[in-house]
Figure 1 (cartoon, rainbow, N blue to C red):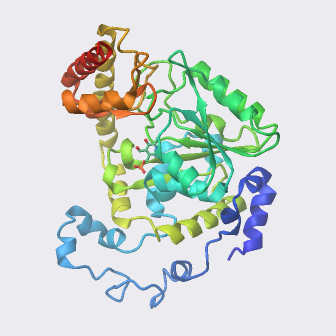
Figure 2 (cartoon, helix red, strand yellow; figure 1 turned 90 degrees about the horizontal axis):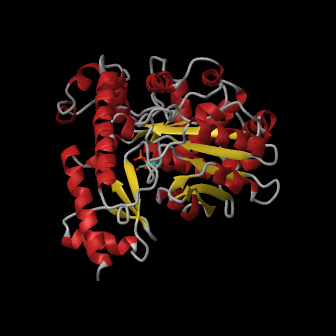
Figure 3 (tube, rainbow, N blue to C red; figure 1 turned 180 degrees about the vertical axis):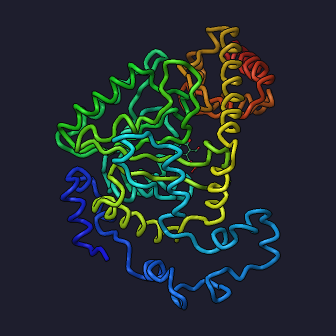
Length: 430
Ligand SMILES: Cc1ncc(COP(=O)(O)O)c(C=O)c1O
């Protein structure tokens, strides 16, 4: 059983950078040797009186028929795995399957932990925030960004969110991210969120931009520990040639001992399973190494203290989904549908008045951002679209308006753009 001092020592010995990044909570956390720990050790004994699950006495769930009848084929083959508690770190089969689903062969793949299962990507982000953020920790976030980062890192952990403006003249500037890291006080550890394809921009760096970013971060890690959180919520949704779709995580892992990427991904968008709440968190340490075990011990402690364990039923659903022949073709079909919506939106925007509709560069994901004409406020435009044009979009504040084209039919995208164009034109002439 790891002890407090030796989990921290394993981290310090293998990764002084992670040691420097640990929050007070992260340093204190360690998976306790209480019920789930003792129950896991007793999994194969004939009389298991450890965990308070209501079973048939032989390890099987004593399920209500009213429950099991709802589960269809899952109940026939996997009733116990679906309805008993999941291990705190997640279903072992799901962890292996997800790793295989995402991992390139070779050194980068071998140098990473097995993914820990979380309740959606949100909880994975929150666990990393618990582990590495105290009051005042700088969290650099390319802006505009997904607003929930403020709650996860700022509100809950007191971290200091530093928005990094990456859009200049409606184009993406990778160098702004590296410059922002350099501008932090000398030697100070930083957390950096890298969300590509991004929400709200719908942008992924091109090959050259990715090289500039990766090499810049490797150089910046000479001066300070950097935790680079790769939020891969929209993984694989890339619609242009010359834009890599593989996670940035795989370009960062193993590049510098002070540059620690973590990979956060999940079934939410990748398997179109929004309500199942299955996410994953992967660390850049080889599975079964002392440091991987130590980090997992801390994360399991934090997870147990917040949600208990990940949802068994959803995990089983994902296991069975990943094992279903043809699932990859189905995922590809969804991506094609989104790709067609992407191209359709591009065409509609190209045909609109360029003084009114000014898209910020986008090439991937689910969204596009419009930079509104001078003098128009995005919140006022949003309300007007809702009140007078029967149209809902998201105001990002200032001049940015976000369109989630992933949830609009291909044939309606032209109408969406026409309505926005009419609304902007009316508001400008008032
Ligand atoms: C960039 C980004 N990260 C994380 C999440 C959260 O994902 P989940 O719903 O799996 O918690 C979202 C959801 O919209 C997102 O856009």
